[in-house]
Image (tube, rainbow, N blue to C red; front, side, top):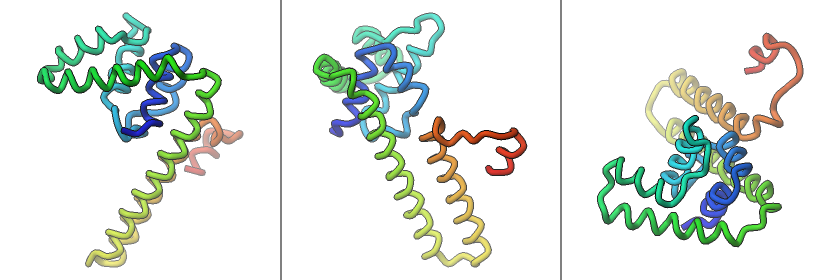
Length: 167
């Protein structure tokens, strides 16, 4: 199990401030493991009725509501317990550092996927014009994805029209 995923999730279980920052700055694509837990935390926290970090009992009830098999629920609840245990050992001052490592890891993974997809297209037997269009779309989508990782640092001053032209 990837320790960085669990560390980030443990911060989310530890403190509402960390939960809010995490939910506002990443999505489930960033996780290599335990995406399900991030989604459950995010859905519960963003629900206007609750606006709280879901407890272990709430997570279990949601798994039951979502019709998971008992063996899967047991496995997922053990994963939750591991993350919960980790949350009690974390130093809150490390959150920003770990979140940056988490974003960097996702950035590298997004670039690798981009390169792999480009290589597949280049090794295919399509016409050059079709290859060019597909590769350009992959690069454009990857660039937008990477910009979104660091969205706070990529906002440019200027008019909306200028910003639209840049994109």
